[in-house]
Length: 299
Image (cartoon, rainbow, N blue to C red; front, side, top):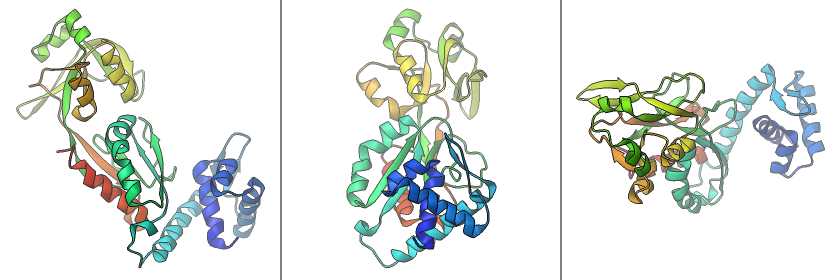
């Protein structure tokens, strides 16, 4: 293999944390991949990967080499497609991350349109509620909901998700329908916390231009958006959620909107990606497509 191909193999091993999975994805023998990495380490005079029976992980030198490889490979890819305007010529694998609810309700229903437009692009879609390390885990872009922390990444605002308050008909039949946030002292909320063990959530709402908060009861705390809505459907309490993911439940009567004058502030949604100098054409067209389809859902 030439040096460019060697870098491509190294990057795949680093991103998959596995010689076996990298070899399978590249249709190469595992022994060839392992031998290639050993040759790279010998040529560079450093150890690029920590190897164990369970996991392959980048060393500190390996991380530096990985970052430079990504930059170089992106530049090579850009040069190869510089004068090709046909969408069918934009190829390669995209690794993206978003929440389960975002993937289920927002992206997957329309993803076929994108793949028809760009048939040579492959999508690796990660859906979790925990925040991935965009650079370390090799993601091209991620969709994040909520206020962003300063991470050194580039963020493209997509819009805002309107929030609503929901409960199940069974819950309201048992406990009554609250008419004002002050009534919530006698009600249960389903609490959402990314890290279990430190309950800080409460019922938030905007009154005029003021953000107010009311403490509520509630025996259930969850750490995934999917179980959050499921707990509400099961009659375990009230939830505050983006309207987008609740439309079907509201239309079928499985959930009911309550306290419509006391909604939480809209949640910003952003497209986050590494430095724009490393942006491949496939990542650019995918992010442009995401921006395009958001107009039907977001403010």
